[in-house]
Amino acid sequence: MTRLKFAAVGDNCIDRFGPPLSQSLVGGNAVNVAVQLARLGHRALYFGAVGEDTDGRRTSTALAANGVDVTYLRKRPGITAYTDIEITPSGERIFVHEDFGACAGYRLDDAETAVLKTMDHVHIGWLDDGGALRRTLAAAGVSISQDISVNADPADLGIAGLSVVFASAGDDHGKAETMLRKLLDDGAPLAVVTRGSNGSIAGDGLERVEIGSLTVPVVDTTGAGDSFIAGFLAARIAKRPLLDCLIAGRDHAALTCTHIGGFPQEPQPF
Image 1 (cartoon, rainbow, N blue to C red):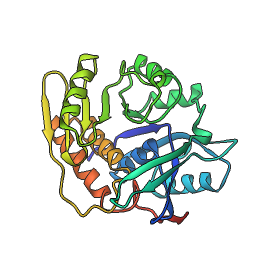
Image 2: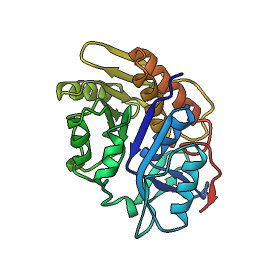
Image 3: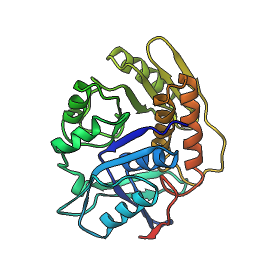
Image 4: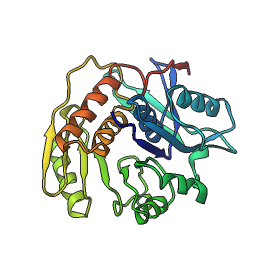
């Protein structure tokens, strides 16, 4: 296997689950993608910010323990981001409150951006920069992806310059097809839409492929979408066929569903 160079930029957070779990885990789209790419054997760098607190040290330790390069993990004043999550009796997760903490206002400097330009691929998570990094990297010809379901503010979204656009439609087949068509009509060179337990679809304007999900004993779906992204990207940047990329994403997401959190870790009480 060729060892590729990836970077993930943006969000990290402490997922704080209420009763009955009453525990917390390290997560965030960019963090989970970086960890999963490293666990797949690739070089993975994480660019983001944590607070100068216990949760910040916890996040840095978790990244490094999974083989992620934390050279560019920055400490900023304030707290490390967190998300409060309630679990319904049926097991559904409800996101109650989110504080972006040190992630809010995080920007890369010129030296850090120069490092990103040397990567085989850069994935952008939640980043409130109005799309500035995406445009800069695209102008430099860097391969970039983003999950547009992560950023809620339209000012931070935009698909111009992205090599791969990821989106989530839940379990809705019709919504997924509509999203795929719109992304392609808007100029996405490659769009990938996940459909929860119904699998995923992808298209590049010439080819359209789809695949169902694997049946596994589901422990927790947190971070499964991020693992899908990592598996898909590892296959895509290695120039594997589009269907193989969906299979790689599906299999990696399924594995994540069999344990607590977006990657294997020891939960802490909350």
